Amino acid sequence: MIPDYQSLMLPLLKYIKSGETYQIQDVIEDLANYFHITEDEKRELLESGRQTIFSNRVGWARTYLKQAGLIRYPFRTHIAITEAGKQVLSEHLDKIDNKYLLRFPSFVDFIRRSKSNDKLDIDASKIILHQEQTPEENLGNLYIQHRKYLALELLNKVIEFSPVLFQKIVVELLVKMGYGGSVKDAGEAIRVRGDCEIDGTIKEDKLGLDTIYVQAKFCKNINVLVGKPEIQKFIGILAGQGVKKGIFITTSSFTSDAFSYSPRNETKIVLIDGDRLSQLMIDYNIGCTYQQIYELKKIDNSYFIEE
Image (tube, rainbow, N blue to C red):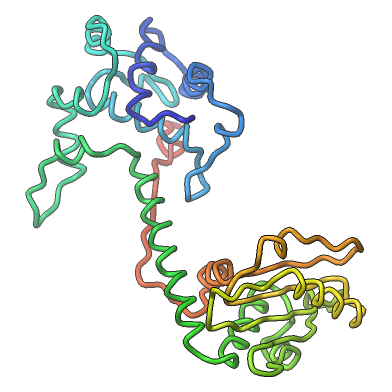
């Protein structure tokens, strides 16, 4: 299990207690060994996908220790303990956390600056005491929560309307994902058949090197699941069309045996249920639009190099 960033503070300070200068990457690796972090855990990424969770947490442990004056950066990518840091270690603490660091005026000033607001008088100590995750992790969790709510709203909107709108969504999604050529071509290939069935064959790519059979089932009742027999029937249709690849989309979901069913021949099928459909709609901006864009930036260390 990956420890939180506060649990990393004391081990980090102990690791550099000798007073020598240490490369940050070496510190990260040795802390990973100390906490028995597995290779899979080392590779776990933040929601942004740009940094591993463990190195991010070590980074924030470093930042807070530095702002408290317990470590310093003698030069790029290296850290060392300060005299104040050595004094802290002499106390033989069981843990260093945000509550402990609030005894250092420089840390309190840092928190107050980073949490300041022109309109609100924020109590920095109360905020930092309840901050269990790093800022990037908090943002990532908020993003996931917002995305879940948006996906649910999108799916509810889809099932409010008719199979005709569902057909439009299916066509636009497949085209944006690179299938079916143009919207016009895909729209002509994928048609509404009956009250709630949509099907047709489309090109796998713009060159038309292969063909994919698409079937979509529009269900206003999301509790009506698509079962294994319908998947078997779908595979039979593919065989009749001379097609070896298929996509089955539904606004509801599939039974467990439908999801686990695997054709014995070379036929390849992809099942997209309502949840995955709404997630793909978000990814490809179908039925939703940008409300606000936030840019998450970090220090560019390569800039701060003297020629």
